[in-house]
Image (tube, rainbow, N blue to C red; front, side, top):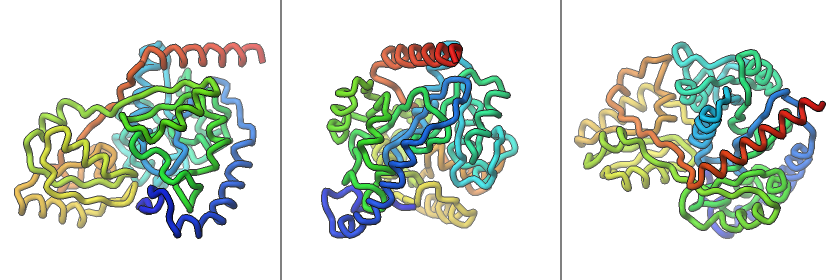
Length: 340
């Protein structure tokens, strides 16, 4: 879906009219948050958002996985597989699965880390444990109570923050903010903006950890696009951030095409984009997540073979502080499970 523009305005008539629906949705979500979950038997770290839409969750998952590996752990990512048709539990195989099967984010990540997709997260936990996971990293699922979390790490964009801070559909929040704050162990603010400062103060006041991080373009992507005139297209939660990052990396963005988040690109759409780029002498580029939707196994759509993927990684301003938190939380989790 495309995010409604009024979600990110201070006040609007549309938002006010939808607030009664938001109150009902929020009450149900808050009750759901309060439920207990299954003990996975191994530590579970959840990476999530307070709101719908993009904030950098997938790069954060991959950065956390790398941190855990460096600490000697064997992490496996557990995902619901949003927009994929397979219910699972199944281990994602980038050689034979497509985004339509398992979702774009799991497919993108599966080339770097073992990923299990399961609509029923309890089944996903069982499969991850059978695959030798020493710790599960949940990609989303913060508002889902099915699995007990040992720590919840929440991502928020420093420029956009929480928009109008209203509950869906009046705003972007997935649940009322207070119960979400209460269940937050780590707040990761992506970028230098100040829109998340109020939330950061609230998390710090309850002794939560607040960290800053930045999305850093890959050197190969920057080199491939520096000085080039490009047609950029994407179907992610915050397309403007992608376009801004391209510009700051030295690309001249001549044309932009924004699609709904998780948009399933058709062959005709990609052919039209490729034809427009060729006509105007532009280089066609998109995100790694979007590129995953253009693949069938390892093969790209024929018309997408000239698309330049723009890769980014997440870098923490104080990685050592996060490592200390994670190491301590894993130790406490295992000690508690041993005593039980």
